[in-house]
Amino acid sequence: MSTAIRNAAISLSVALIVASTAPCHAQSYRPAAGDPAWLSLERGKRAYADKDFGSAVVHFDEAISARRESFTTAASRLDQSLQSKPAKSGGDSVKAVLAAFASEDFIQRDYDRLAAGRAPGSRPLLEALRKERISDSHRAFLDVLLLVYEYSPAAGLGDSIADLSSRVRLLAKYPEAEYWKGRVFFVEGELPLAELQYKRAFGMRDSLEIPGEAYTILYSMAELYGARSDYVAWENVLLEIVEGTDVDIDPYLRSAMMATLQEDGFDRFMTLYRIEPAYSLDANSSLARFYLERGRAMAAEHAAIAVSMCLTRAIALLGARDKDYSWKGLDDFMARAAARRDVSSYLAEVELPGLLVTLADALYVSGSRIAAASLWRAVARSGVEPYAAVATARVANPGSSVRRAAP
Image 1 (cartoon, rainbow, N blue to C red):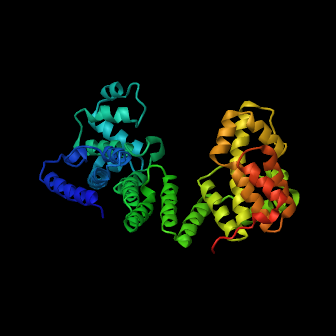
Image 2: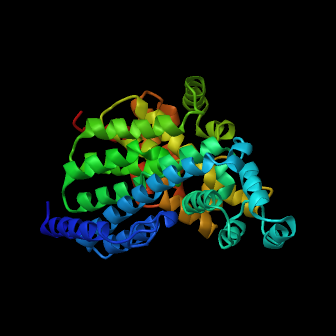
Image 3: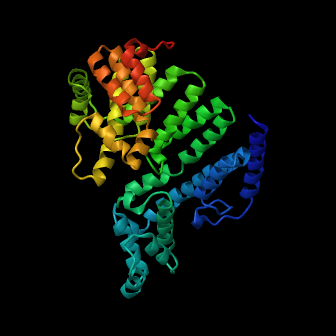
């Protein structure tokens, strides 16, 4: 481990010893320093961006510790609050429990004054109630809700006390901070430590504020395995991404898609099948190239899915301004896309011409030579370099599409 990270770890240990001797107000559910966990996480990200990796690790560890302490205390206080008579009368409804506490602590006109202009159960109303003289159980319940709202939107929390309790316990873990520690270890060349952190973060994925960030973790794991030339692990991680996001593309649909592509050509394929872009786009693209280089039949399927995702998005962009647009084939699409800066920029970003060449190569290798030649000619006519030149070379020498990578 680097000297900077070792020094950071020592500094953190000293800081935690000092913090453990400082007074802490239980009702705030925060560690002695008083900063919320998300603020320490953001400080760590800034330090990471500044390449101050030692400080970054300190901040990420502070975030993990603050989150654990805050929500462990919050879980205990929530349990105590729910033992009170008003809470029991509310059953499994957050709204009913809030109403029961309010009826016990306020006369109606005072509550109406506080609630005026504030949505029921909203952060502004909870904060206003918290400033009043209320029971300890009521205050604890409000504190827990406000703490949870820092990491989960109120609208997504629902009205279930059981779900609230489960969420509080999940939020004691901080996968985002665990993941960013892994990023530090990765750039420092500590690949075994980075792998452990990524796996730890992914194991906590139910605690993520944004569930889709689980795929960010998986992509980082794939990056690590690629750096280590562990292509078996790399492939397995990308397949996990594909299997987790492409659930709507069942085996029957895959078979029908490929049959249409191979027998009726690409234009018919895109007329019938549109796949919305998903987290698996990059995984499908990478697997297509990987399998193509090794002569494996799955290359065409992954390339077809990736191309459909890219084109589905691009077609929507065209249609957003041209309401009369409809798919009339790849040549027509490429000509229209070239005249639209937003569409052409998107196609360059996702490297669509390169993906089309990959798909054509994979079709040729799998025996669909007419479909492959049609795609090569379309890319060559597009004039988008360097792919047009590659496609032109393929038309002249189709055998050049066969790759020779190690298995």
